[in-house]
Image (cartoon, rainbow, N blue to C red; front, side, top):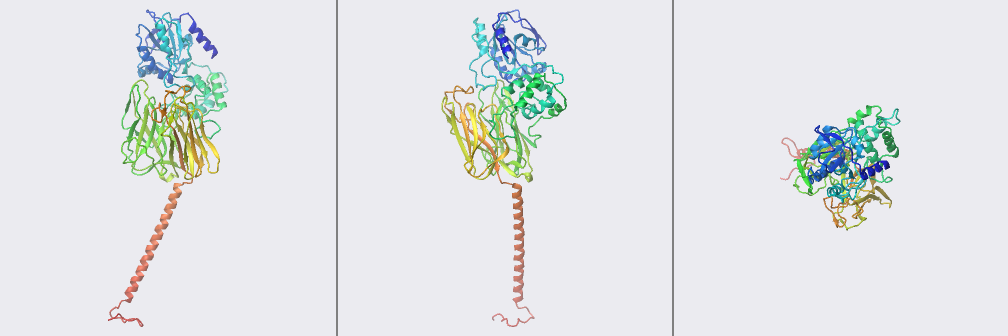
Length: 625
C-alpha cells in the first residue's frame, strides 16, 4: 500500500506525458488516448458490479454534459478480469453513459496509471500530463460512515481549474471503492483451498446477501465469484465493513450472528496470499443451489397491486399499497420475506395488517391476541423472518396487507413491484403466537449540534414472556442503541448493545435462546443521537431534529418479538376440547336424567288417574265430588 501511494504521488507530480494507448469500446470500436485536437481528458476506472461505480455513473454523466466533447474528453475504463463486454454494454445502457467504456483486457492501462480501484478518476491536461487523481467527491469514505451529500466535488473542481489554465489546488485524494481484480496464480499444494476452507465461511456469513436478486452487489455462489473479488473481500473483512454485524461482543448470543472469528479472517487472507486455489469442486456445486427466496419456496406470494414509477431525483413520500389476500379464516405465518422488485430504489418496506373495515389510510393497527405491530419488513442487511419451530404470527380472517415503502431515487427513472412471500404453519402445529412490539418516541426532539443526545423508552411485562429478537431502528443521526432487562428481583442484564449504529445495514438480532421475561420485568431501550458536525452522515447539524418519516428526520423505534412464556396452544386446545367433551357428556347425562325423571313423573301421574273398569287403591281417597 505505501508503494502504491508513492507511485500515485509520483505519477501525479510528474511532468511526463502518459504514453498513448488504444482500447476497444463496448461496440468494438478502437479508441486512442491521443487525439488530433489536444484537450484535457478525464479517465475513470469503473467496475460493472462495484456499488460506488454504479452510484457515481450518473454524476459522471452530469459532469460530462457540462463540457462539450471538443473541450474535454471523458473515457471510462474497465480493467477487471471478470467483467466482459456484454456486461459492460448493459452498464452503458442502464446508466445512459454518453462517453466510451473501454475494456483493458490485460490491465496494462491500469498499471500505466497506477489505478487500483473503481471508481478512480484521472485528469490529464492537453499535454496528457496527470494533474489530478483520486475520488470523484468526498461523499463516500473507505470503510467509514458516508455523508448524505458531498462537501467537496474534487474531480469537478480539478477539471474547472485545468480548463481555466490554473494549477490544481488538491491534486491527489484517496479513492473509495472496489479493488480492481486481476488473475492470480495459485500456489502448488496449498494449505488453504476454497472448497475445503473458504466456501463454508462464505456460505454461512456472506451468501445470505450475495446471491442473485439479493442486496449484495455481486454474487458469491461460485468459486469464480470469490476469486474475482478476492482483493476486495480481504479488504472489507480487515476493515470491518463486511460481513455487516454491529452488536458488541459480550452481550447476548445470537443465532444469526455474522461476525467472523480471527481464525476465519486469517484463513481468507492466507487463501488470497496463496493465489486463491480452488481445491475440490464439489462444495461449489452445492453452493450454486442456494438461490431464490431466503425462506425457501413460499406457499404464497403477494405482489403490489400496481407497478410504481420512481423518479430520477427528488424526495419520494412514503408510498402505501393495500392487498387483500382473501383469507376467510385465521392463518398462521411461520416465515415471511419482503422481496423488492428493484433493490436499487427500495430503501425499506414494512408490511402491516389492516382490519377489513379500516379503509385505505396510513394508520397502523395491531393484530392477533398479543397485538402484533407488523407482519414483516425489509431493510438493507435484514434477513427474512423465520420463526422457531411451533411459533407463528396470526393473520385474522378478512385482514389485508398494508405495504409502506420508502423509495430512494438513484439518478435515473426506475420502476418497482415489491413482493411478499409467506410460508404458513398448519394450525395443528402452532404452539405459540408471536407478536412484534415496538417502543416509540413520537415526540422526539434533538437539539442542534448535540453530539450525545440520549433518549429512553420502557415497556413492562404484564405476564411472563419469551423475548425472541430485537431490532433497533434510527436514521442518519443514530449513534448507538441498547436493550436492557430490569428483572423483578432487582437484577439488570444488557440484552443487546449496538455501539456503532449503521443506518445502511440494519439487523434483527435473533437470540440464540429465547430469554424469559417474568411479569414485572422492565425492558429499557436507550438510544444516543449525534447531531454534531463530527457525524459525517448528518444532513444538517444546525437543525432541530424531530420525529418523522424521511431519513433527514429521526426515529426512535425499539422493535422486539415476544411470545407468552407458558403458552401451548395445542395443549390449550386439547384441554378446551376435553372440557368441551366433558361438558357435552355432562349435558347429555343431565338431559338423559331429566328425560328419565320426566318419564317417571308422567308415569306416576298416569297411575294416579282413575281408569275405567278399575277400583281405587285401598286407603287412597277418591276425588272430591
